[in-house]
Image 1 (cartoon, rainbow, N blue to C red):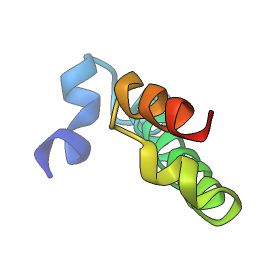
Image 2 (cartoon, rainbow, N blue to C red):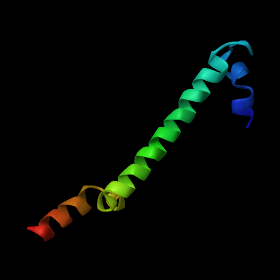
Image 3 (cartoon, rainbow, N blue to C red):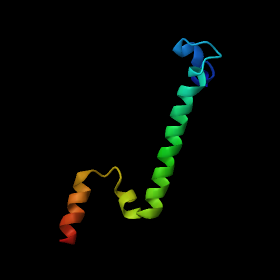
Image 4 (cartoon, one colour):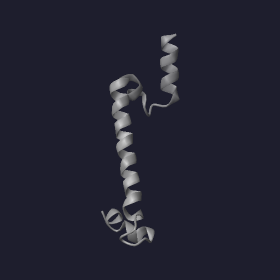
Length: 67
């Protein structure tokens, strides 16, 4: 809470500076874009979405099983 509320103090900018809303806005927009991409991938390719975080071993095992 305080990091966002007092961001202008944290970055050393004045309260009227565009930095006080621009940088948190970029972070928030990045979060929203990442969530949208994850939802798109889950709806478009559930198998690929399910493999996220399993590493290369899961891909290699699946590739070997399908051969």
